[in-house]
Length: 463
Ligand SMILES: Cc1cc2nc3c(=O)[nH]c(=O)nc-3n(C[C@H](O)[C@H](O)[C@H](O)COP(=O)(O)OP(=O)(O)OC[C@H]3O[C@@H](n4cnc5c(N)ncnc54)[C@H](O)[C@@H]3O)c2cc1C
Image: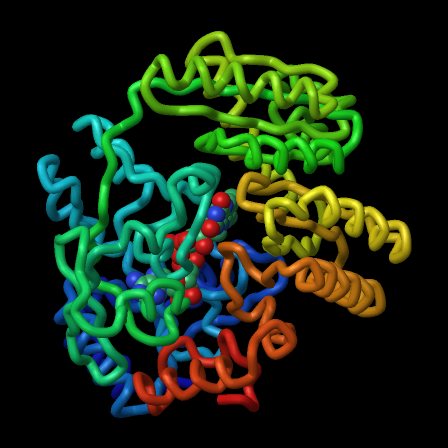
């Protein structure tokens, strides 16, 4: 329980309306995109300036009060759950686009800008910011930096970290630190910006971000390929990537997700398909035509049962809407959904899918897959119920086997969702012990009182 004097100091820093303590308000900040984790904060603060963030952190540090940074709370790793109580520092009122520079191809934003608002503002000027987590309608840019988020476009354009040029970060002691700038190249000392990109709110609060932009590709074409066998679909992805063509997006959707989406919003999907790939080529019109033709040829040779090429922008938008409904389809399918985020080398995708099929048979759990196949990044999901301890423990054990299978193929625990609370028990297994220890030491240097998002990434006893 937070001392009253801390709350009244918070009110002095932020004003009455930016400090929430009513139970119904706190409730809204007690959960995130997972179905497993809930914990109430003692207080929620809604700063509008870096100076206010600095004063909040200084107060929290002096009083050793936990602070959990939060954007929109859409993460799926337990990252923004205030597991130790204390303060939730939510950035949604820091939502200004400060600058879009069409000549320098950069933009500077506050952390609470919603990704979709940013995309719309850029599109009006013919500009494009590729990282596109499928929560783009709600997630904040600060949250995507803290998670180093990815999305369908990352096959061709890379993940969030490839676009971060400058950051303003408030450290645990309240110091407002500037990193990087507005240049594309910068070789001044260690790459500290990368330390904060993907740091899951454990090293500092990001209060300003400068991003690299691209011109909006003038043309694109979407294709949907239907498969009778999931692993054959996985092999088709490897064949496309080996052919020299780099599509903008290659996404994988399994039969379970196809049927769920069709039930939720009928859109004429091929409900009998075992799996489908959604692929987009983009670039100049001539290049797009040539690449699309090459991709269709590879899909035919790879055993696709049917290939549909979207005839116009509306049809393409319908296919992509289906893909972005995928998470809702999965997360609404059971009381508790363990939806993971492993990534394997792209040439191992078919082998990984076969292993998942074996794990499913052996464990008796149905496993659904959806994901960014072009990056080898799948979201295998197990449907369970946390209220049934025996079944939930078995589901977690099965997820452990999925992690092991991915690691054995040279894969990683998380392609984009981060470790948070969800994957910390596997971290030791997946990392070099010296590297892990170094990370813990870095945390200790930057946040010696462990006030920033405590209880995350590492298991408790390690920090
Ligand atoms: C439907 C759906 C689809 C999704 N699809 C994708 C996808 O395709 N790719 C993908 O990568 N993810 C995806 N996600 C996960 C999630 O949307 C991303 O992780 C996103 O980056 C989180 O942004 P947020 O604003 O919601 O951050 P939050 O969930 O609020 O926070 C995420 C983490 O960042 C920290 N944090 C937030 N803001 C700051 C800040 N300003 N400074 C420091 N730390 C901060 C928090 O402490 C927390 O650890 C999806 C989630 C959903 C619900």
